[in-house]
Image 1 (cartoon, helix red, strand yellow):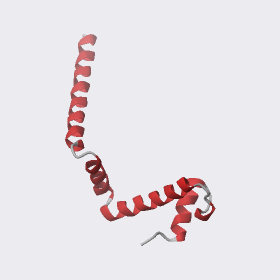
Image 2 (tube, rainbow, N blue to C red):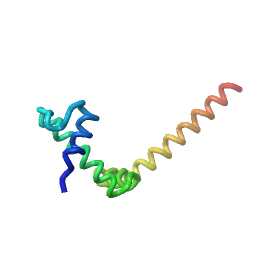
Image 3 (tube, rainbow, N blue to C red):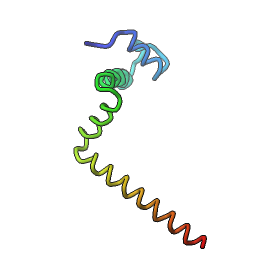
Length: 89
């Protein structure tokens, strides 16, 4: 199931300002194909499912590390606020 010529032209116009058939650089043509493929995958999975799948496929422990980093960041923000309050006193 390939993308239609209209879809390739639409994405090519958005990215490069010309029709797909006018693209000379193979990298540009691959970029259009990658954008179309990513959009198709996103539609199939839904946007939040797509983000979650990509995040965990590339880095299986990333979800846990991300949560830990977020908690550490929140903790640091709280400490900075406390220091600011103490300086004002």
